[in-house]
Amino acid sequence: METARIGVTGLAVMGRNLARNLARHGHPVAVHNRTAARTKALVEEFGDEGTFLPADTPERFVASLERPRRLVIMVKAGAPTDAVIDEFAPLLEPGDMIVDGGNAHFADTRRREAALRERGIHFVGTGISGGEEGALHGPSIMPGGSAESYEALGPLLEDIAAKVDGTPCCTHVGPDGAGHFVKMVHNGIEYSDMQLIAESYDLLRHAAGFAPAEIAEVFRTWNTGRLESYLIEITAEVLAHTDAATGKPFVDVVLDQAEQKGTGRWTVQTALDLGVPVGGIAEAVFARSVSGHADLREASRDLPGPARGTVGDAGFADKVEKALYASKIVAYAQGFHEIQAGSAEYGWNIDSGAMATIWRGGCIIRARFLDRIRAAYEADPSTPTLLTDDHFAEALGDAQDAWRDVVATAARIGVPAPGFATALAYYDSLRADRLPAALTQGQRDFFGAHTYRRVDRDGSFHTLWGGDRTEVTS
Ligand code: NBP
Image 1 (cartoon, rainbow, N blue to C red):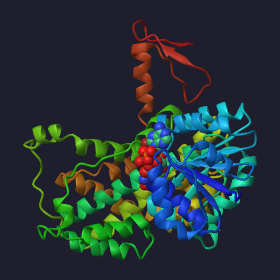
Image 2 (image 1 turned 120 degrees about the horizontal axis):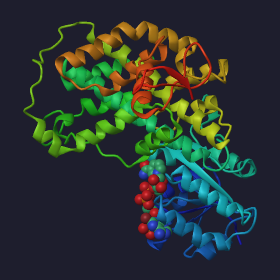
Image 3 (image 1 turned 180 degrees about the vertical axis):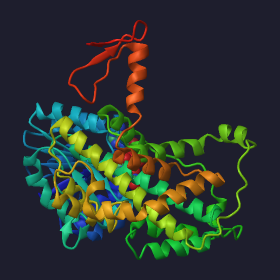
């Protein structure tokens, strides 16, 4: 009987395209889906693309896999993933591998990995970015799990991943939940990047007075420079699009309420737990949330604002470009800080430069910019922040006047720019000699005797605020 090198169960858009990608690369692939009609449809439509071994039961599916078995789950994250693991794990043997390519929370992946490890089964939580097109033509792949499992899986995954300069956009991220953690932060950065682009559009429209088609041209120009990226490219496409039904710019007929699936929120929740400031990602999540509160927005519509007017500054678009680039540096610096903090917390030993390398292609945040980040980590693998890398520090310095002008203009004419503003505040906070946190500590000691440390002596101190205000050592 012919055996498959790998199997995919869960054949909705992602699983089907991943299976086709594997088959197109010459890997015989077993395919299975809870509802057998999807399996049949895949083989009928695309059977000529490679060797597919369809199975109508989990038992037949598992039996068709070569050993050690490589089984990829591409089902809805959450309870369905647990249900599929419960169904398949009893059919597997020690040494076999279950790859979860769904968007699982890394804590779930850690739990599943630990449970399956006890049974000798490798559980490989794997972040896959690039949507359905990426799954078919080459995604960015972020596998966690054991190093041993990567030896057996890595060549296959690298084969089907996107390639940039011949380098596959896939590497072993680290043990247990590391892959899904990095995918989560990738999505958080994606939120931030999209929000900053949206603010740039809003300012070009309402501060500079450009029409959507003109803004599309601005983005096209930016896409030939240092901002070159998939997100800038598609932004130009969306802004240039005209609605067929009304003849209006497409962007003007779309309801302005952004939705979210949850990975941005997870990134922020996790950052809060790790104590990592990710204001850019948080503002992006909140901006989507604000947009969706139609009731609040309706109730607030008549609140007074400034006279808008346009800025009449011929160089304003260039200033926005600088503000966007600087804020983007901050967004990525915050995301990488979270990766480093997660890596330290869970002992994953994640190579940040390698993450920048595998995000250069296949995924939604693919960009020329990631080469810079890779180079920054190559120059100093243990840098605490990307902001101080020579290239980025110079770019931030060069951008700062324009960046401040853009944030001030937004505030003055009443265009919300929370992403730009929080990025600038983060930059100024990090470079400040003194922060008002000293006052915060004084307040905390006053009302709660929480103590404080001094700049001139070691130890913890408390002032007797309700008494004679002498200072005591605590
Ligand atoms: P969906 O997330 O829409 O899930 C549909 C698949 O899950 C179908 O194959 C369905 O089987 C199966 N399934 C469900 Br629902 N409950 C099941 C259960 N209890 N037992 C067995 N199978 C079950 O599919 P998708 O959009 O292809 O995404 C797959 C995974 O990839 C998700 O985790 C998603 O978050 C992730 N992801 C998606 C994208 C994207 O762009 N769509 C990108 C990156 C990652 P059925 O056919 O029998 O109903």
